Amino acid sequence: MQHYDFADRFRALYDKAVKLYATGQTGAETYFTAAETAFLAANGLTAQNLYDYAEDHNNGGEPGYDRALAIELVRRDYFLNVQQGKLPGKIIDGAALPAKTDAVKGITWLPRLIPKTKAKLRGELPASLMYSCGGDRAFFTQHDIHPAEFLSLVWRNENNDAAIVDWVVKRSQG
Image (cartoon, rainbow, N blue to C red; front, side, top):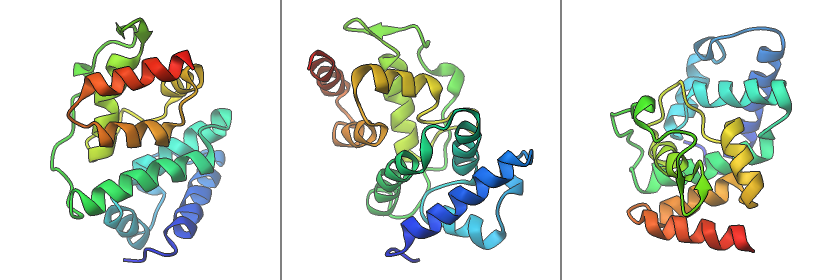
């Protein structure tokens, strides 16, 4: 595994995915060589992660490389240090997430975002869901929260949803 140049290698794969998507190539499984896919897997990422970033990058310019890297650095840290480099072996059922319109303490989207973020952190998101999708980004923008900051918050409070909610409420008032 290469740690020092992770960001450089991630950038090369991010740029490759953006370029392939721009040419009309679809299907995350078609984007990377076996060695590139192995690099992603060794760092807790999937080709789908990069495909989703490329799709949104081409269709609206967000979340962009910098945010994608920040998100994946938090995910990678969790994968390497908490999960000891091993995937959990399960994927959440996206249909079981709270509705997009659900609210807690008057904050819409948050009841959905918390379990979705936990799934991102743990590598349990199905291919049909993206962390920091357009809906997530609207939430983050409205509440002035960086997506990687929220991912880190959820990690620190992984078993304390009330603390996550309270933090978001406080941030939203600031």
